[in-house]
Length: 139
Image (cartoon, rainbow, N blue to C red; front, side, top):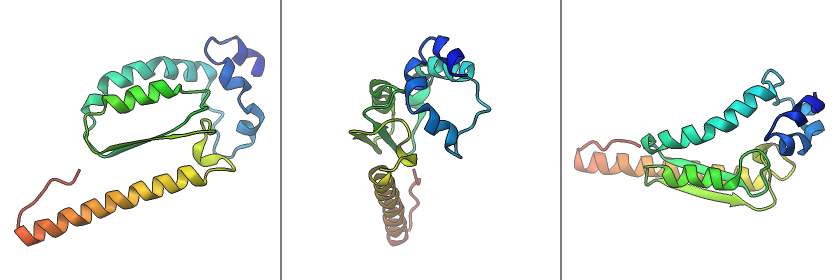
């Protein structure tokens, strides 16, 4: 499998990145072919074209050393979001598997903190609604 993967353009860094650990990870799916991954990587640019339609709160957490998705691609996605309620977190020393590493605490804590802030914002909107007897759209 590794020999085939190494012949596919654009996947060299993915193959050399912790491949044995990926195979032993119970959350890794081997049903996706390297061809599927290559097509997905090519389609990232197409996704960025549609991202301006995103209006919900969005958190982008990116590992600075991610060998699969370049940091500038994620940042371009983030910058293109039309929502004003967005947050960017770049974790130094992290790769692609932010929540599945032995150092996942930083990413997990950032996610939990963000979710707590989102929940508080919804509660605040509901309190204002009840005080003013008006309805705000919950985004």
